[in-house]
Length: 227
Length: 264
Image 1 (tube, rainbow over the protein chains, first blue to last red):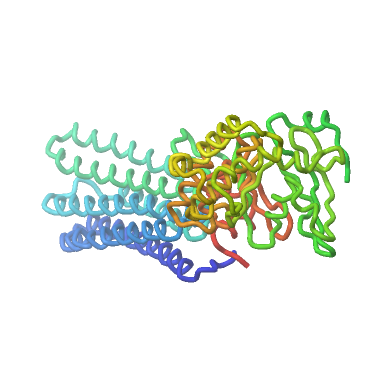
Image 2: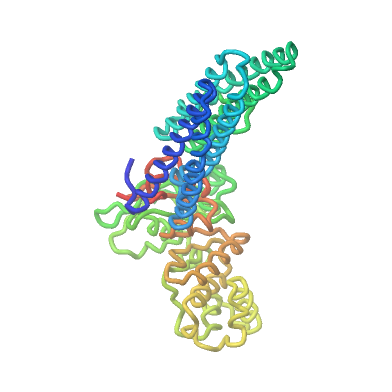
């Protein structure tokens, strides 16, 4: 593709793209750290993860500022306009994922004071899936790859099913032994957070499809078969 | 020049006011327009955009035969307005230009009074009655959103008006002969932002009664005022579509490059 005649504009759009990626990478890392704190029962790591959330928030504000400046000063059109509006929406989802990572770390902290009720297998699996979706949605954003983005939307079902399965399992724990209720509830929260991460990754992927194709596929019952 | 029967034209489209088919214009050895076909909707604003030399002004000038007198010009193809080929020898160019009015980049009022500027066209077309002329002048100035500013000084020279007022006077002058179509060639490019906003507001009002075709270098202006946008490049019509689509999701890469500011 050709470059903009206005080099400053070109550089600022590039900076916007890079900042979204930076924020995405940070958020991915936050999820990974929070999950590690949970599985290794590492209180200090949980604390450090919570403390890092302000970096995510700072990027959220910076990207908003840059996007608003671009809108005001350059009257962007077509693909540039779609990139900027996508960046604005994607950062909102990323910021929420950052908050969810923080919540996971909080639950991890709480869980360290109690004995584990079961080995962590399902939650790390969900976390891997959610993180994979997030990673691919950001990849799709950089590479402007609508097919990759569509695959993210399709993956959301698997995570929803895992959450449902874990829900049933944890409910049976609680029914069998009420002493597990507070621990099982915390784990259930984490499951819900990860399920939400999948939803946010799906939102990002849908925005990427809009960015590339100029077509909205949001709020459909099912992802479309083709684009 | 190819002749087209009006029945054929009306069969092609019912909503288009102007049908252009395979229009090719050559100046000497240069091809200024290359087989351009375009439908222009009735009571719609159609914006023609593209870099200098892309053929958009040549195209505009073909719609009221302003190119006829350029030396060495050769015009091929068809232009039909209301189903009638305007290059038919039976068509009187003077009558055509009454129906298809034009406003230029640089406002060009006559060095006469405001009243005489607006009354000029109707007088040429034979209106003599003072009362009737006054009615036409008032109506035209009202339509051009200038009446309130000049009603008390109609006998003053048009040249005393501000640039924006002069341009609206030229629009009033074009409206005075009751055209159907208004061609505007960069109507606001010499005006300040407020005068420009007034012209754009005026275009919104005029389109309820007139078919408007506007050439502009200002892409935001095209985006604001038009219903359809046509992108020209090197004499070819690259793409035409609803303005919103052209500026958010154009179909062709060349259009995309132009509206996003990626020129050559």
